[in-house]
Length: 353
Ligand code: AMP
Image (cartoon, rainbow, N blue to C red; front, side):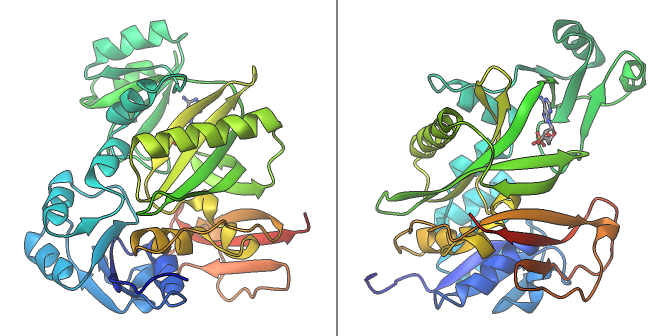
């Protein structure tokens, strides 16, 4: 039995679908949720106990928000570091600002990961000017990716550079970008870890992720990977989790290379799209385990009940009023307007194991 909780109200920075699922799940654990969102029509608005509207750098709103909650977590890593530090000075922030700081900046993230013995990322260099880009272009085989080191997600601020288009980048402000070698991976996988205040760790095991135009299209469990790849993926996730002294959640996205090597693509210290299958295929889903971890309860083994394929409904793939059936679960994110590349909902096809 869990001991009596001293944490009753969870504050969430961000009110998108990840915040929405946290609010829904919190009811099971008898926790209240307060959302701080920059958008009053956000997905979480219908499900939270209280909604604050304000910018993440509006310290008056932040002050009011943290007065009402016992711990703060994030559903997006794009929160100014100054805000995170301000919150952490006054109240628990889980995962910690140190972890979010690493995950919100690709340079810090890649340097941290490569500093761990036996763990590596794609090859990359920091660039600031077109001359740096040219050097990297020649070094990485005359084709590469450039990504902004901060505020890039779902392919935003990412460009593929080749001999045909490189000249277009001559006059672009490349300050704070990285150039990354393109890897010819066999598969993309991810593992999600949960760690509580007492140091108990649980994992959602590796899943196979397919991206299109840099946005997650589908996640499949179980993945068709070798036992050795599975072992490595979980071991790396465990080592990263322990090194960061995580309390909360950490998603680790990885590339499996053709030679069997597993390298890390990126980290996300928040609920992750590739964990949505757990809503229908596990007894304890990713949102419940995050809430447990940060509210001083014990994280639990996910207890997998079935296999599943999760597909994102992006832009016009989404249709209103589609109804779930026995083994097909449909989720609506209640977004006001359909936009190209916008995640509008998802569907999970439950499969027998
Ligand atoms: P990211 O925002 O870095 O996670 O990139 C989004 C997606 O773009 C990844 O999930 C991959 O499908 C693809 N991608 C990113 N970096 C690379 C790379 N260095 N080589 C090949 N594909 C990549």
